Amino acid sequence: MVDRTWVEELVTQFPTLFGENPDIWCGEGWKDIVTDLCGSLVEVSPNLQITQIKEKFGALRVYVGVCDVSTYNKAQSLINEAETKSVHICGRCGKIGSRYGRLKTKCRECIEGGW
Image (cartoon, rainbow, N blue to C red; front, top):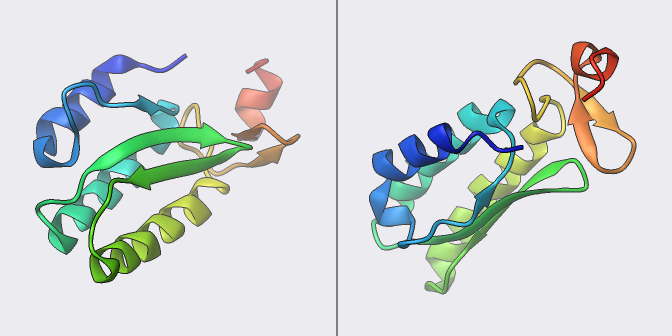
């Protein structure tokens, strides 16, 4: 379940990155990773648009819209760093975690809590 409050705050903080209906579906545990990434992407290009943010196979996935090759390469480098960080952070609570099975990154407490 995605807490839409943090998503709304993210879109408000970075309005140029998102269209009218942002497609953001990942846990609040990755809020800091996503927020930092958005700040960096705005610096790469004020015209860059994020088309989707989601969790896939226990890792963050971020997709951007059409842009020039230089901008894409810079953005993709930042996105790759964020995606790599996400596999070590619990998607639910943000604590240090690891991939649990193929589908989620979880911390010990969230595993024991049944998430």
